[in-house]
Amino acid sequence: MVLLGPTCHKKSTTLVCLAHGFFYEWPLDVTWKRDEEIVPRTAVATEKAKSEGACSFGIASRLSVAAAEWKEGHTYSCHVRQGDIAEVEDKMTNSGLFEMQLSLCTGQFVFILLAVKSFAYGIALGIYTACRKTGF
Image (cartoon, rainbow, N blue to C red; front, side, top):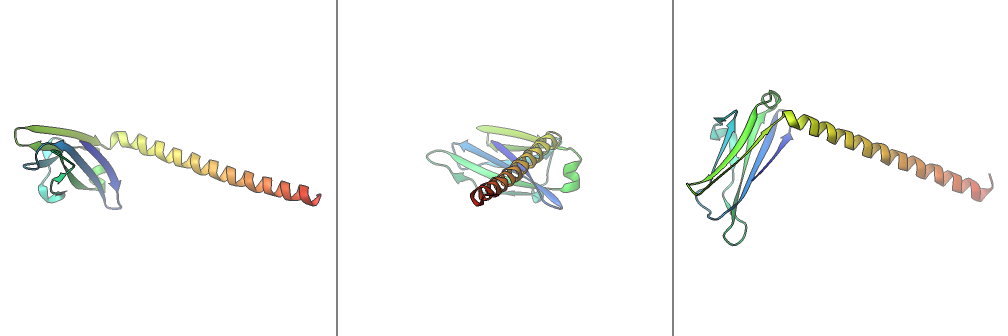
């Protein structure tokens, strides 16, 4: 199982749960929880189970959370159950994501800084080469 997210929009955050490797297509039941309490199914969009090859099925589910609610730091979990055969769970909270997003922003800043530096170096080298050819 993989819990992806969050995808942040202006007014909401979307969490995606991907569960795969089940031997049977039916019944796969997805339940989302917020702080260990079940989230109503009206806030969830779950696709039908899909074949991933011989004797392997997977399912995807999305949970949309109000942006303000996501910022409160609740723990969200996705539970996928196949009758009495198998059950998997994964959890996510926004507390650890802040450092990841900060690290990502820092990485993007460093990348842009290096790109600008390379561009400036290329221009300076081009001017130097042109001046050298013309004898300045």
